[in-house]
Length: 290
Image (cartoon, rainbow, N blue to C red; front, side, top):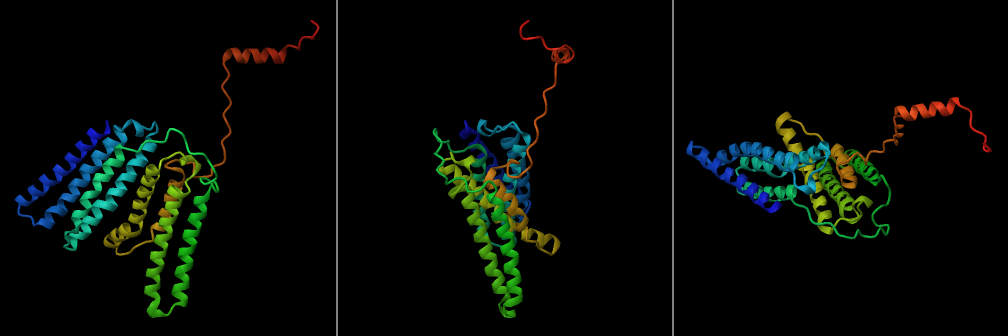
């Protein structure tokens, strides 16, 4: 039963956090220093716990035969932890804000997502045309996102008055973020692919929230990490949105990539079948009257 494992994971995570903060305080660390140091240790504990819950000993609902599928799911939860817990907490601790405590609520949802999923409907919803309006719809969305972003940036930098360029780029950033969120919502909740037509509303919203969290990490968190580490930032969402839209449409599989169909391999002949084929080739066919 998932509930027992879920409660055990919460106790292990939060009890470790409380004990480690207390242990750091005994060495004379300030509260902000203690919490910052513990964030790194808790990240290691989270990595080990998520490996066990997602890859090595997943619930029956998520016990995929493909280890690649399990690993992709694990990387997804690592990215969510980085963007929703570790990096926001460190940034707020560095700024001296007590709001870092809000990030402590995120693991409650992350562990729940690892272990539990809403039940599927017994009877799939009828396909009335709402679930499929193009097999590669996500590619159209990705193209619109990238082209609109570059075109908007070029128009603002060339046509807008110099004092208003910064404000225009900020508005473009907000519009681009809203457009990305709308696309993810449309592919996961409003008009999902026919593959996800039988999912309940809770399952669709769960997929939407997961992809939304990953998108917000790409837009708001990872650029700040690059800025702090390298002194420069890159629009990572222009690349990440392609993978996110493909995942929203088809899930963590390769079905979103339009590979040419593979020809089926011929079955290997057994020795007896080979002998029979050779006999048919060498001997003339019998007359139908004989």
